[in-house]
Length: 128
Image (cartoon, rainbow, N blue to C red):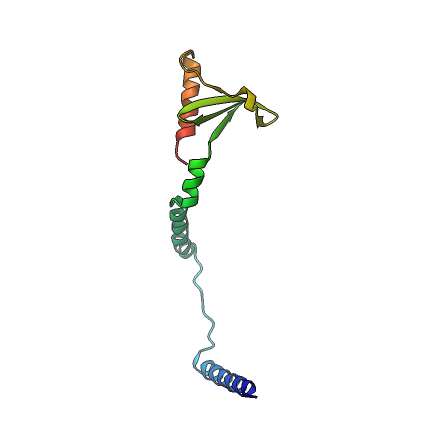
């Protein structure tokens, strides 16, 4: 019985407050200024916040960087750096053939191969 009385008192208070607020609040429609510049101002703050969040290092991004290896695929070869050594392997049916893994020997390369290797190393070591 006491729950019913409490519920009725609460319902009565809500109805009274609703009627008081309806009388004080005007029913005029609000005109919203929609221009290209106002939308740009509105969205620029949001975009800037998202860019800051995207560039902020987190524990999970640090963990992923530490425990993952970047691989570059060129034609039918895959290249990656592990323990400061450049490795290559053949790609068969879109997958790296682990049995053909070998270190890249830069001492016996000619100038064109050396430039290609330098490009690969630059791309593999650059920050995202």
